[in-house]
Length: 499
Image (cartoon, rainbow, N blue to C red; front, side, top):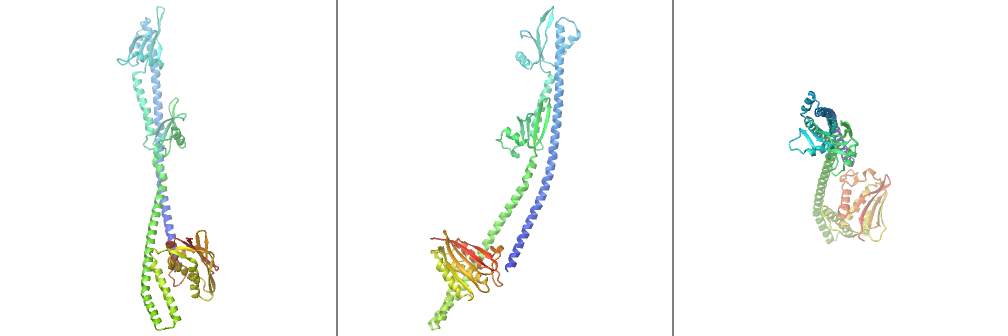
């Protein structure tokens, strides 16, 4: 019975374990495939995004070069305009010079004398503060010498000029383009965590999509740059000397999918663990109900014949039946009554009172020795003076009786059983040792499970009840202390002493 039931149970455990491992591997492989597939898709998007950034930067760079040419042309035009103006005020009658001076319709110009007085101006907004404009253009170094000679006398003039109206409009568009480039880079459709730094890499210009990627808001710019420098990098040049470093990493989807298998396995593990705990709890509750029902029914079934037997004993005494036989019968009936009391206490918390283990051990040795084979020696070794615990005497007697009977079954021929009681610290240890056939180490815990037995007609409930009485009702511990094949087994019980 033991081999069939527990081997079948172990076999089911292995099958369930292999099935769970197969499911986990299957889910892991498929999840890995999905993560790899999505990661490749996202990587392609990021590569396209990077190429688009490079192309857009190239467009901005070419546009800025074109604007610089416009600026140079404005400078050439103003130089030509000044020369034509000098020619006219010097008294020349060159029609071309007059045409050049009159054709300036786009470049704002302020002409001042050597004392800073404004001589003339054009193409500035009406009501503009011309003196302030002069100061602004002077700081920008946007002026040329417009001095001329009249009758050998030098007349000093300075022409201040601003960007042409067309160039100003284009420059605003350029500024918007550059601003949009930075904004669209950090807030991108590919959801790529990105930062933009200056060419030296010591100043953070912009950042985007960093919070979900693990960078906290309180991080400094330097911390952000140091972290992002571990990832992909590109350098874009928008103009001569006007370059940026762009650092980026995998998209947020890929970063999230990286942790998805771990999250999935954690959820599966927690689900399996909770399910196992629930089923184990339900099984223990069911077992407890079976124990209680069986014990109560057994006690009830024994009660009626016991009452009848007690009546017969009293009748035998009254009729003078042989006293020795009546005493032995009475002793066995009292024993049956004790067994009925034991079963009645299973399933309910028994009353615990101070119990001295010394007389209990000695009485049990005497009782079992008288009912054992002559080639079996049972003896007690008491190694302490006081051995009191909080316990229930009928249940403790049942424990010792079960252990001694199992030891007897382990010794089909001659042998010895020793009950060793000693105190270590505040613990009382009771060892039940025999010289039987021993127990394989892999079964040391199994022997206390319901249904385990090596007997052909056994039910495998004795040691299970023993463990329940010791641990559930007396807060003790019981287990196989040592065992060797063909040399014997020692089972140790530990109780807390009250002395």
